[in-house]
Amino acid sequence: MTARHRVPVYVALAVLGLLTGAAGALVQAGWAAGGVPLALAGAAGLFWGGAQLTRGKAGAAVPAAGWLVAVVLMTMPRPEGDFVFGTGLGSYVFLFGGMLIAVICATLALPAVPVPADKGR
Image 1 (spheres, rainbow, N blue to C red):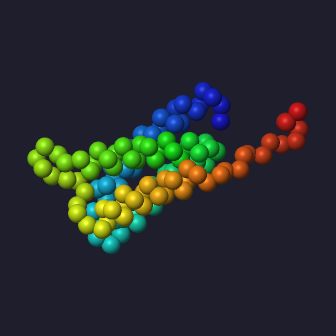
Image 2: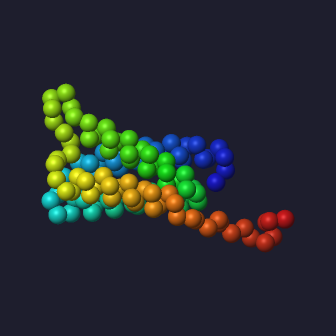
């Protein structure tokens, strides 16, 4: 990936992280049995996909930062006193599970893309 393509890709990954965090916050409480695994699977797919796309750890860290910003904003109480997150084990599994997945995807070492022998000279 060239340097001029890198910035738009990271911006897009950050926006996708925000959207994934907001959608996951709504889905995890909405479906009793399958909401948390679905929300965590979406986050894991984005984090790992970003790392694979950029071939670097920042590709997982940037959408994870966007996800974290969205989740933190969703946990704050609204002026009316309402919360987006419900009380219960599922909310904590979503929060800590998402952070754990983000750390795992950001710390896994990705091998560099091999360069053909004739182009390396």
